[in-house]
Image 1 (spheres, rainbow, N blue to C red):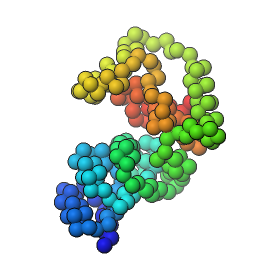
Image 2 (image 1 turned 90 degrees about the vertical axis):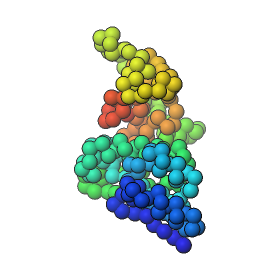
Image 3 (image 1 turned 60 degrees about the vertical axis):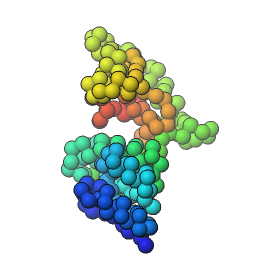
Image 4 (image 1 turned 135 degrees about the vertical axis):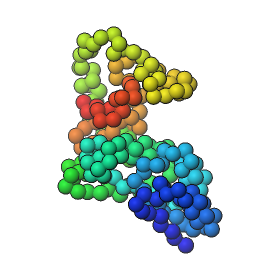
Length: 212
């Protein structure tokens, strides 16, 4: 038997864990339609990884904070979606993205189509020219003339947002652009490559991915 859980947003319903668990235990094939905003919630993620849905369909309202929040009319909704999508991908959940196209975001269709993947480093990949161009431009950027306080180590910046010292160690470093050069931290769009800058918590919003 097929069961589709939708809404509104089903994951915010206080009875969702009980309803989902009962349906799964009864052997139903469950599909969930969601905006993804609650997928980084530990309890929700634990439920969906131990009792995996048949399909998790996430609505995508834009590829940038401006367009996404503008369409949903909820400030911060894009960041919640990004965190939820990242958590779902890391957990290996069966994700399908449903792109919602409107006049407000139609210019970002190509970028939305590539949101679920990182950069492809394999030989012959069409992403490689954008990656090379990005790194060349980064190499040409002059070091800015900034006061010493700007050059606090990355873990000191993240101390404002992360209480666990062990977690802050993972972000340790003293570079201006602080990121791990791996596919998960590169966003390929129709305008080129963007590198996610994890130098500090206040940068992880609009401008945290720097198009160069």
